[in-house]
Amino acid sequence: MKAQGIEVKHGILDAGYCSEKNIKDLFNINIHFLIRMPNNALATKLINIHGKDVYGAEYALEYGERLLFMKRDSVKLFDHECHAYMAVDFERMSGEQDHYYRKVIKEMGKAQKKTKPAKESQFGYFVLISSEKLETFEVIPLYYMRQSIEQTFDFSKNDVASAKSQG
Image 1 (spheres, rainbow, N blue to C red):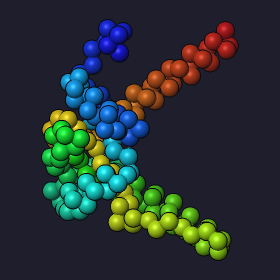
Image 2 (image 1 turned 180 degrees about the vertical axis):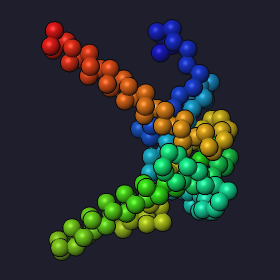
Image 3 (image 1 turned 45 degrees about the vertical axis):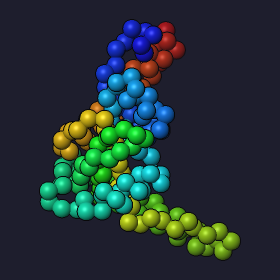
Image 4 (image 1 turned 135 degrees about the horizontal axis):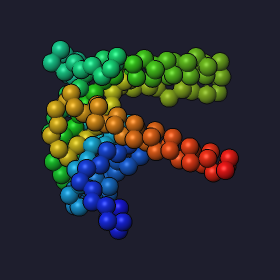
């Protein structure tokens, strides 16, 4: 983007971009970020250390019709001070449980296959990492702004492609 003359001060990134290299690069070029961590060992470690007490009225949030709990803690990540936002989303939890147990039921009939045990205590959890200290009530709307922007670009691309094919 810099080569195109576009100055970037903030980035909102999905889990696919969450890597040690990318986080270090963002810090080194002074771009503030909010990024979702993939469901991996590092996210599990952060949840186990910082997120197990997230259930409590002081951490409750509403985002539209959704109920979430979110807690912020300072963490050192890849040699940089960051802010980790551990969250539990009950709608997501329900979906993850549904998906997992339907898979278990389906595979119970297949004697040769064993279902990998779930980390049931982690259903519904997710972790967002930021280079800036944000208020927890700001984090979810800010993160989902990325999805709105992606949908707008997708709509625009498809609309232009459709117009070209008809033209």
